[in-house]
Length: 378
Image (tube, rainbow, N blue to C red; front, side):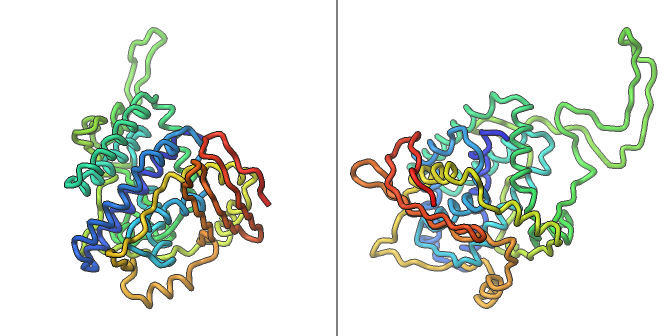
């Protein structure tokens, strides 16, 4: 497991979340000034300096429920509100989109190009707001400094860590189903055509050499696909052509963001339940999450701001039905975290975490220091 995966996971999921919210804000005809405020507030919170300092520290990935809590807090960083069913759907869309992108990356290193595509789009959302733009530019620099020196082996470990995180998620997404890149069971269809990864050759040729290195003969075979030569290298700098389209915005006002719940087999449901059992390292994970959440300075709507609700379903009735019919094995449970700074530079955290039949209650004052841990977990 790579300890450098969390920043890439967060930025790419955050980028997908912004794509979806931008589509829904336009589709529901939310006034331009309110829609812009929502996008600006979420991006400001997402690229909060103290939050990113915690995020970029080497650490293991959080559990699915813990990460969901971070994005729940992030999505409500402005005057927009989502019901639980819409938040569930939003998170499903985010995770399945990024899972698809990771699976289709020709090389493990291309995950960084996917991240830059998301960053480029985020930068375009705030191009008229210099203060937020500077926050995004600082994150670009952090990504370049941390990831461009990594070897192919280190990127492979990052990719493997991401795939392990996504392996039990098989939510059907209408866009993928219509494009025939996802099967009815929620599993993706990997292509057998297109350009090969850069640095490799089109499969179909076997060369046999002598002990001295002289080529003796060549044998050709049917590779079973329709491959082409590799594309040129994408830019790993702050500016430039990324070449790959993975990580770009696939939504529009006319293209809905519908999802369909995949029918899970008995064995996969059992496997999911096993994975959602209480984590023996829950204490450490919650400590890390406390520090991370403490960096998210969520803004409360002022007296002049009028909040509004965004629905990711066609109607309120569909939203209510989705909440009732959502399978238990796909439920994220409840993790409610309040983390706010106080004058003496400490953080007050209140956790309520319910996983199956085990409940953890934590109520503790902790100093705002990276090495502090919660003293009790019951």
